[in-house]
Image (cartoon, rainbow, N blue to C red; front, side, top):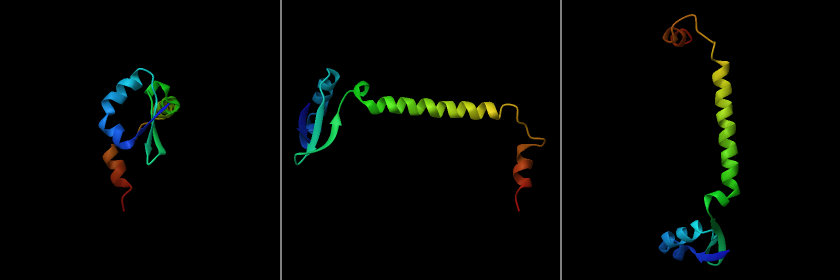
Length: 86
């Protein structure tokens, strides 16, 4: 993995992205201290975790939709809302 300073990363971002598409990875440093990694999305383990989290959220919403599928109010929604006001 190659290192690149923040200033160089800012000025050469397009060039670095082309290299990342070709499989290269970069560590971005500030004053020689690693600050971030520039990697292709498919190579980042966090993108897999993000996909798993999205799947979990999607399942939760589907479960909620199924729970309320057959639930109805015996009165109009406006009346239900205003009926609980003091």
